[in-house]
Amino acid sequence: MFEIEQRLLKCGVPMGDVVSAAMELYVPHGITRDDAEPMIRDLIRKYLKDPNVASLILGAILLEEELYWKRKESEIADDPVFLLSDEIIGMAIAECIGGTYARFEFTRYDQKKPGILGKLGPFLDDAVAGLIAGCTSRFYSECH
Image 1 (cartoon, rainbow, N blue to C red):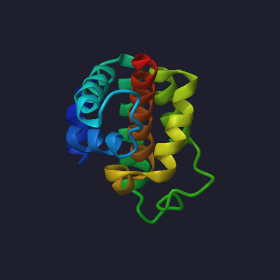
Image 2 (image 1 turned 45 degrees about the horizontal axis):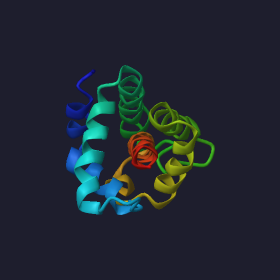
Image 3 (image 1 turned 180 degrees about the vertical axis):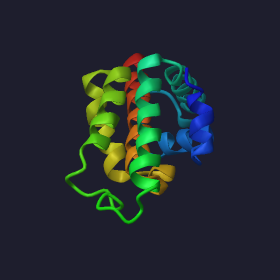
Image 4 (image 1 turned 135 degrees about the vertical axis):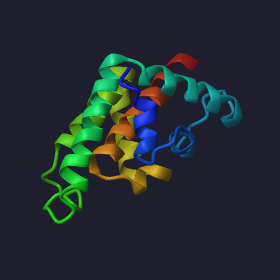
């Protein structure tokens, strides 16, 4: 839906980097990191095709372009504390995929910003963190 994986790649966010960021904060739940990585990759790819997740990520991509890249000198260039819509998008993505527990997982990824998350602008870092958090939270829940 909306070719989100390809759009993310055009924004400098390849799937391999998304999965690597997810694995940086991976918490083993009876499944080794090596065994979990392809399963988490599959979940991420699955949810990139979900119309609700895809539309929220598309919104983040468009907002990143319009409000961040086109306005590098604006007051949101440094992701100020009063900018909340990026966090709301990230939490919405996480909860859409993984439910309420995913909101707490989102906070871990949002605060630590592992891998590519630390290199993205204010909308994409939270959208991708929400995608990772939703998928890892769902993965942890399904492992039990």
